Amino acid sequence: MATLVSVNVGLPKDVEWRGRITHTGVWKRPVAGPRTVRRLNVDGDGQGDLAGHGGEQRAVLVYQLDSYRHWQEQLKRDDFAYGQFGENFTVDGLPDDEVCIGDRYRIGTAEFEVTQPRVTCYRVGLRMEEPRMAALLVAHARPGFYFRVLTEGEVTAGDEIVKLATGPEAMTVAEIDAVLYLPGHERSQVERALRIPALSPGWQGSMRALLADAAGEAEDGRPAGTARSNAGLTAGSVGPPPAWPGFRTLRVAGIVPESEGISSVTLAAADGRPVPPGLPGQFLTVRMRPRPDAPPVIRSYSLSGRPGAAAYRISVKQEPHGAASTYVHEHLKVDDVLEVAAPRGAFTLDEGTAPVLLVSAGVGATPVLAMLHALADAGTRRPVWWVHGARDGRHHPFAAEARDLLAGLPGSRAYVAYSRPRAQDRPGTDYTAAGRLTADVLRALAPPAEAEAYVCGPDAFMADMTEALRACGLAAGSIRTEAFGAQSAITPGIAQGPAKAPHQPAHPPGPATGPTVSFARSGLNVPWDPGYGTLLELAEACDVPTRWSCRTGVCHTCETALLSGRVRYEPDPVEPPGEGDVLICCAQPPEDLVLDL
Image: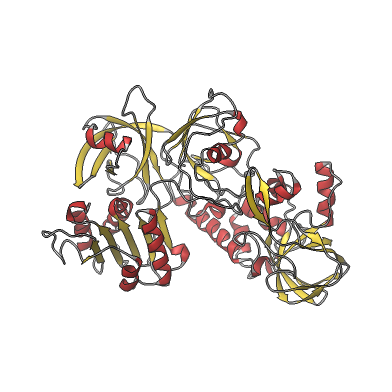
């Protein structure tokens, strides 16, 4: 008979860590006497990061005495106390390789259901003073698991744990944890997992992503042996493998002005062969040398032409004091050559039957224009909405091109807002209405709630449009955005101060003698020193926005496109990233490299 050995609670608190403050509830302490367990947690308990912990599906975290003994032996430690692993219930019994998702138990007067394994993040390592802990929990198949509270009631240390039912499919906690985090992802196991109603919605989403990836694996045309990203962890954030490694030279085949301050550049292969196709919405990263005696500048530009064309088209806006855009607008000539990385990005048009909303402002039209081309080429019967904001006709790129494409799509709708139309701009022809394209305007258009939306433009514009689309009933997962600059950071639990512009490290750990790390989106070239530890820590030293959670090569939150160069890992990730990507939380550069950060 399994037994509840200890009930542990703790409220979130601020803890200093690596010179920053993290808000965490991982410090749990045993309590004496009965405690009431409610729908969201145990009385007196709380979680610091509700995005990753807590909630109805993760109300109670369970960890086992047998795993305590395992880690005491593995880590050569004898200083553990109940609650050491951030768990609410320390139990004798209920091993991860026997407990199944959907199992039901009674403890005291409360009843519970197993919903998912623990989500490993850096904070368990913070409490354990062992940075590798998140990876070790997965690698050793000892994650622990969460309970959902079916019946609220009182529990007390010493209570027997009575099994009431076994979950359908009899899939253990350790087994499903391995399906998501370890290499393999066998389709039959994924399908079993999706037949378990008790599996939490977050894990169901990951399993559906794995299943969709397996279904499309034979159809994507990638070379045999090409590693794929773990779709269960990176769905929607990492694109398909690149068509070629690093940079190759392409010839400038044409330069065409599109509007005031925006010009398109056509890039073709020097040998005249068609370039590998990019997906609608992807971007090219271009390395330019405006000054032969200065370091190159690296910029990314969305593909704006027809996907599958023999050459690529990018469209570049002249930025005030912009080194790259000034070079393109004032010095680049036909037959010049540029160094170009393969099309990348996950902001891509999904296949399906749902209505499509293409929402943009200014040069943000570039990726959604490529999507419009793809829809027109396919003769789609999906309802298509083209919503764009510009200053006036002189600053309206691709106006005629978009109108022609929409004319070939029966049932399409267009709304173009000019914030300051000129006298010669024709209402009803050049533009729909005067004024800015605002959240109120978008809500008034009443787009269909079942639509899939693709939004590109300035950050404030995308935030307003996203809020408006949610108010119109669109699901959060149906709204995609594309930022031209650095992506927003994901730093769970870390107090965020005012945003800082990326910069050279204020206090380098050593002399600037290592390989150069280029952060393409941030326009920064930084010499490496081993004292940084990892590429993630180097980025943090430069205030380059980063995304991470486990910091030990498990969760793939930090998976980033590696545009050129190679890395080595220390420690090795639990599962390698996809071809052409890198897990920056545990990677170091042995040579110059370029990251899509």
